[in-house]
Length: 245
Ligand code: HPA
Image (cartoon, rainbow, N blue to C red; front, side, top):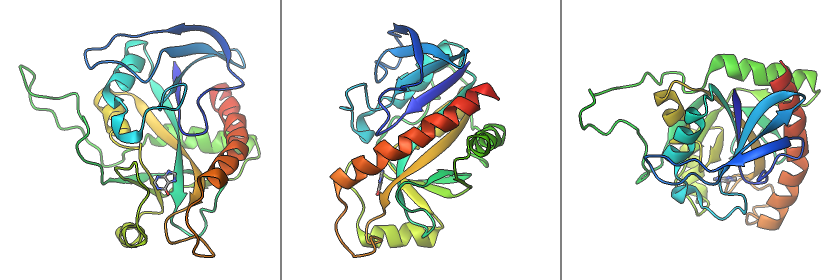
């Protein structure tokens, strides 16, 4: 089954015909909320709002392990993670969509692995390609079919948050090669890999990253929400084709 994790601007999926919700208990504590099961175009889909259905859980307090474990417990084999980002590359303007193909993890202090020693042998997942190429291609094809413009590739920098970055931090991320910045891409992607789930991200550019605003103005949260509301319509269109292909 395919799962969709919704980020900022997507606490529910308007095109999901909901069948039921289920609270899942996990060995890692509580997920961000009950899983929402339903159908899009007659295909079974499960949805989870990463920040909670009321958008109350900040990026550093999300229980990523519980979320991924809960989805895995329901036989989820693929996750499309919708995540809002700041655009670093000039082409990634507010409202643009992208399917990153690499990431760099700058987060700290998060519970980032299911492998915590104990009786289990030491395990090192291969993470050379952090996103499933098969799923990435499926999203790109879906976007094409839905006639929604999506950038193919990009390097996602995962920062700790919840504050936004300084202009100098964004300059450093750019020197590192990052083209977009968000706060929730890790450890989510690595945890999915640990459980053998195919994972890909559909990034939605909410704002120019710090210091990249054309007029050098501060990042405006009201403007971000307006951008996301429009862009999520496009995301829903793409997702309808993703489940159908
Ligand atoms: N920085 C980090 N995370 C974000 C941003 C940003 O500018 N915009 C949306 N998520």
